[in-house]
Amino acid sequence: MIEHQEGKANFKANLSGKDKGPGKRKGVFYNPSMKFSRDLNVEFAKKLNFNGLFLDGMAASGIRGIRLALECNYNVEFCDTSKLAVEAIKDNLKLNNLQSEVFHDDLQNLVKERQYDWIDVDPFGTPAPYLESIIENVNDGGILGIAATDTAVLCGAKPSICFKRYGAYSMKRVAAKEVGIRILLGRIQALASNYNRSIEPMLSYSEGHHLRVFVKIIDARPISLKWLNQDMQVLAEEAPESAGPIWMEKIIDSELVPENCEGQLGKFFDTLRKEAEGPPGLFDINDIARAAQIGQTPKKLKIVECLEKEGFFASVSIFSPIGIKTNAPHDIRIRAIENAQSL
Ligand SMILES: C[S@@+](CC[C@H](N)C(=O)[O-])C[C@H]1O[C@@H](n2cnc3c(N)ncnc32)[C@H](O)[C@@H]1O
Image (cartoon, rainbow, N blue to C red; front, side, top):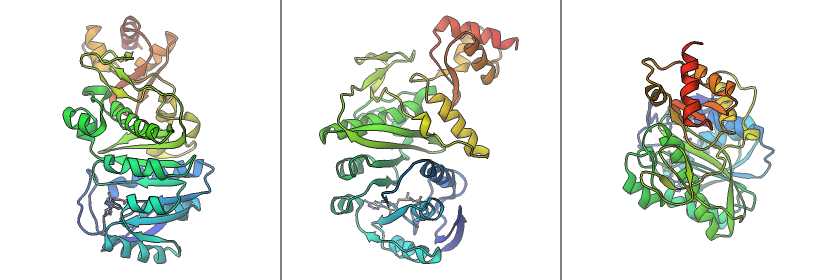
């Protein structure tokens, strides 16, 4: 194992990835490309007034939980099915002068036996097999942090597997990742309703090869999952080429998006905060330009500015570099892109 440093933590793990991709599964897993996800988790955790018990449920080296303990003073416990990982977490706790419980167990067993206020699930691939047990067992008002790296399935490349795994049809192209998040949230909500519970999304995003949601588990409330067609219209019923049934309410609570962060993470949060208030779905700026018969697509920010001048909601999105979130109808989108040309 190699010694690494991330945030305020020093720790040992195998190097399981480089700068991109999901990383290899051998040894004690540590993928440096997920630092952004852990930095984001730390800032989000600081923003909340959380003083319960956090479970780093698929901890590997324990880096996520160790950072939350060191940088946010969280009370964290750890779990992993790998004996090697459990030994590494214990060593890494010592290395950082922390004391905590570490369980060599399947997360699904542990959550039945111990009470947690926040459970983090960070699997290799799909979180689908683990959803039911964490939804059922997390404390009332508790938080679930759920990562998914089965992006091909959630985001349009494998629709039949998506339907089998998540009970929903995915969408290709510009809105694929946002729809992937809505599929995951829809599945969590559907399972929660079996336990007389509902979800309240706190923060959702996609970055690199993964999607992640943070949801609060609340008492049941009536929620209907809906469909999104290719024109980004919300439908109550299934229609050809539409995605669904998916979560169609807000996926980000703008009040919970951390402020005053610097660099790439700060920009990411600024975009999330703004797009949180927009309608579901994204429009491809190149499609709008084609429809307006414009040869070269104007800059995204100029298009946003022109849509806003028309009096509509408009924002860029972390879910696609070529996507715009807006409630402006087709003719206004065309006029805005024509106006953006001359800005
Ligand atoms: C992707 S890694 C976790 C990475 C870690 N959270 C981080 O930020 O570096 C997945 C880990 O989950 C563990 N694991 C797989 N299935 C599990 C289960 N059912 N219960 C607990 N741990 C599990 C694996 O041994 C592996 O260490």
